[in-house]
Length: 189
Image (cartoon, rainbow, N blue to C red; front, top):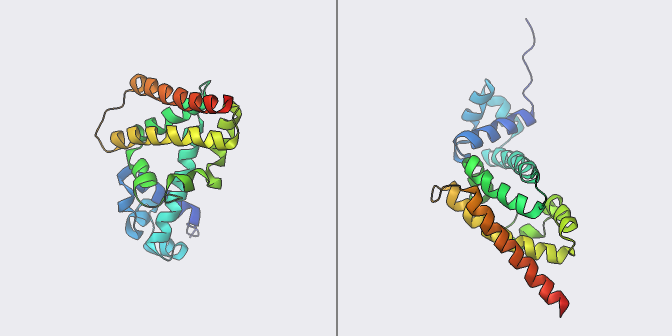
């Protein structure tokens, strides 16, 4: 008789991520995760002593997935591409968007903490290079665009608005150009 396949911590975290993605983070528990893995709850609870730990691990998987999604812009203007991807993510991955940004598991309690987090560096550094601004200015532009994009994304993820990329892209361009213009005007004084 062959030995049973070993269920790893990463497999459990990924299964919980898939549950959050398909049915919402509220449905992550030992039983749903075990069912997803076709195993008993024992391997799940072996790797994660509490469901809270399991949800945090699933959040980390979702956060990495989201970062990769954001960075795949394929556009000349990286900041606008990231903004559009953020909103598109809310339209295509409603459950993950709510898990990442409306569940209380986010990396910071406010926008300043999030912007100053090392976790945001993979997004801010390429943006800084593309815009030719210093890091503080890049963070200001990012904050302005992030608040605007998050509003759109929240409305879409919570079924308050339909996704219309052309309409949203035009608004993002205006906000972006306005934020950069203000900084350029301040720099010229």
